[in-house]
Length: 570
Image (cartoon, rainbow, N blue to C red; front, side, top):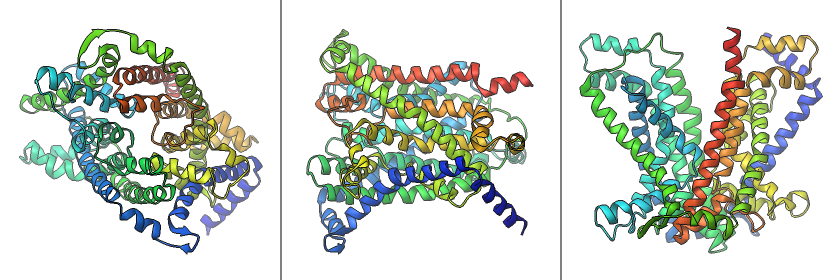
């Protein structure tokens, strides 16, 4: 009874606040039009024809040998990459949390490896793999004297994706391992169990849900990945590349829509399991923090081999990233290794580099603050307010995380170049810079929202309630009390959105028009042609931009962040 009265009072307060009601309505409209509507149009295209509801398009698509092969290929790569990334991520996390690292170099190396995939374009490692291990690769051709080695296909995609995605698993599992109470493991050790037995019987069962969570996150990333299979896949087709070729090569929009629905179905099933089962189970298994500091492993028989394995792998990943700027400075990769800056010069003189960087920077810079603010508003509504549409807003804003970029791109083509918006403003969005900005916002929204929700749950309600008691409305409370307290999350969301937008390719490659030149599209185009010098030059400059953005954010958070003020108050 008391709960129903409290809920009724909350609704009355909400309805009495026109700014809050307007915000909620606008959010629902935005999420419906730019996330739900394109996906609904894909379903309509796939199931409905002039004769009514039909499965003819699916039947036609399933009869295509290349599509059936693409499904098998995608699942094979996804499972291998998911398992390998989770295991390598677990190894790195275990070494950092449990093993006493003897040098700061190792700690710094781990941090670099965890950050590199965030600040680099998604296909950098594919370029490096071709340049190091391809037919003209430095390692294969010049060191091992192998002249016919091919890195294209299943193993090329699997290795590159594993090296790209395992840092994500590492960051996820590191937090889980830190939350295990050391007393549980030490009790087993006191009873005579070996370290391996303690790990298998105590540690591993505790992190198993988290490990499954890391596997599914990586699996979803792998099957949704477009850039790496496009560059290093060769004739090994995956669903993402097959969908792209179906619409750009075969000009079959209905067939591409049906293929997109199949890919969307797989990712959605995995996302639901990951989000609403494994993530919740992992949180329930490891609730709270460790009761005391962990005794780190110092036994050389354990520390030395684990440190060597992780160091070797980490150095290899860093070297692969370093390979990209060198690829831009060699005269002809694989044949003439004299240093030159001609490729950097051609980026700006011959290949409209200034326009590509300007367009990418402006569009990403426009989308970043909008995404960060929207994320904080959604987080605020989800955590601090009670209203009937709250579940809808949270679910739909997170849905974009499960939608592969290629699927979203086709949804936007079908939805905004026709659909129910046959004419008018929304029809006019297609082919403009605004549609690219909207795609950037939609793709980055889940990341910012999750960060905002975590930050807001740490703020005591009484801080905001005192502002309400003094007569402030929701808008004023949010702008003057809540936002300043979570400005670290806002800044992080801003930079993360900017970096994700400027390095995006899968969602925008189908939407970009000749009016706009985007860096990632240029890199993809030159890499496909085999013009690795130009591709590496574009990629090197892009990495500098993204790394510089993250560096500036860290400096701002260090000197102007909330945590600094809290320490000063203490």
